[in-house]
Length: 245
Image (cartoon, rainbow, N blue to C red; front, side):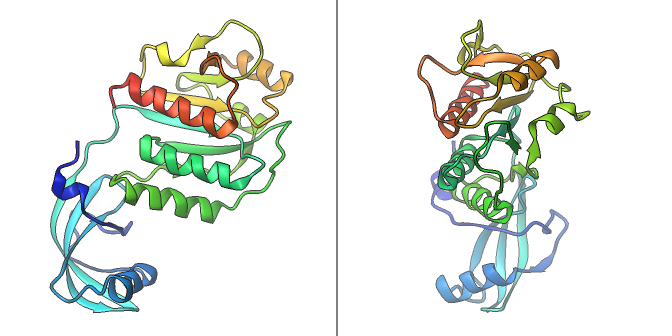
């Protein structure tokens, strides 16, 4: 649980700062926000993460809208999640629903996200740069020090044919009426999990069969029929709960 002091803090981001950094320059967008919007001055202290597991306390040496310079005062390493969750989720027809999923999954706890193009996908183009900004904003807002990885969109066939597929316990959520394991009752056997969530029209029969042949296990997310983005959040929360987060 966050201390009250940390709970109230505003978090900034700089990917290149490490525990060995002495001084650094904020990027232009962050500099403008610090100097123009927040009106921070020389000598003010800020909190920062590099998205790689560290929180920093820094002091402004100069506060210019185009270039804020700061000195690192302290570095604190945050423990990673006790699990590594890779959510492989088909983009939704309405883009804002997928953006909502990205934000909430980051807040709850996810390590890696892969948008996947399926037989029944209606959205075939994504705005990766915008997605990355949403994930970054959610990390900062929820005061996390680990930035989830957003992979490029890939087709279902390419994904399950990759060497990486099946190297961790892998589960597929689909609507077919077959025997499935309940994800909320899943007992952790590994700290690495991959979960596949299909588009509004669900995975095709061919895709489900391909995944099962590759040893993916079918899972149930409950009795209700869920939207893609809701299913992904239920899966994310179930794993977090199962691992005591």
